Length: 614
View 1 (cartoon, helix red, strand yellow):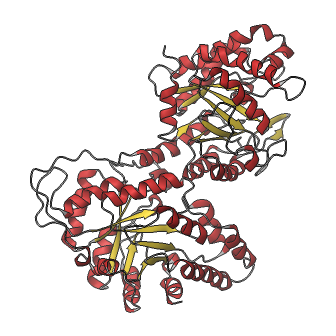
View 2: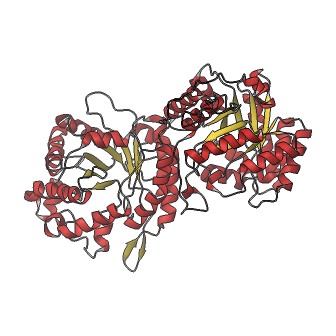
View 3: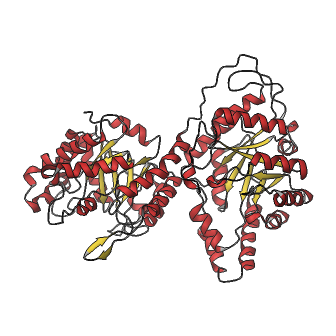
């Protein structure tokens, strides 16, 4: 049986989103083991029970199994008369988890260490107590230690100080948050998770667990990621327990918890799992929703494209590829409006709206491709009808989710044949986000990889290295998210997109002017034009939806408050405030971007025009 593979865990933690398991204590309780027994001693007396619980989490899709050792320290074991078995209890806890994890290297084992006394002992004594528990866990085969449910910064620092004596063992420091932004001792998140100073060992990650349900830890995660650069592990409770027939019951459904796990993943957390009340059913639903998202996030953008057997030709000048490209190449202010393709195949409304926008002088129509994993009429068909019948150029969003590379290349050549030259390449939302959760996400490549494919087609060479005559003339666009909490990753990927051949970029809908300006400052002298995404809010309810349901969108508190202040008024009054906010956004960023993409909520182009005209 393999054991102690810390380097593999660290590499995996930093490369993809992991799913941790759920609660051990509440699962033991569900098996009719009551709280007058020592749950950690069950490793010795009822190992099959513990292995069965761990096995149910592995079967549910957990990537990390946590040992049944949270309270296996001298102080808690003494209460039950088991202090003399401390080493055996911890070592067996690790071995049981290691056996269930197996030797494939796909499932890792976390050694759980809980709280220690805060008074009555010196720091050196507490350090020795910590090491007393860590050593047998490591001997039993854990891949790392997770110090769970710590209540204060001092408690976390003592754990980190102890690990100086075991520098070969990686560890995670996880704190309990009992309200939106405080620990049980009343310490703020900014204090708890400020980067640790010298004199203590460095954790490989920080964490949030217990104390709060999914909503509370989602807010806390946002705050932690702003101040601490380490990977973040988030494991909420299943809401707040309620008494029922003498028992404490958690009522948060697997679907509810998994929805919040998706939002946490959207923030850029490194791992999600669960604490009190989180069962294998919850973890199964989290894994179902997170793993397709992870496939999209971790898709290799570097394609193994066959070396060309023919000489690549020079690309045509950008200004000659489309009217939209001409404006970009000459630094002219550009405007586009996003219209969502219909669910059916009646295109009369979207074509009529496109004609109206053309008459008003709008430069292009943005056409999403299956936004939020929805199924709509082919965007290529809509783009062609708009181009032919409305005389306005489309910007076709091209999604990597639904077809393999062969199918995608075929569509790219089809776009060239139809004269659809303005393309915005996106990786795409995983199917689990939409109304078709059982659909398969292909994700042969991501937006960076497909940019490279298109650039080769622009040079007359296909995926197989064969000649394409004539060359394509695509204008290569990419998306960018200025409000991403993982700014380094977002900036790095944006630069990779530029290197892959991007000619322009359009941002996610941005409601926070300062966030966009900070992002523009961070990327410096950008070699390609950037268009700011603008979304006119139509109501306070619409603002709540954008804030809570649309991945990657952050609505600032002051905007939410402005929308809320008119929430009791008419729909028109709320819409007017939303339009005012959008106009202010345009005015604030106009000197820093090359144009704007304005969304037309519910297909109401007059809303978009009222923003652009101002």
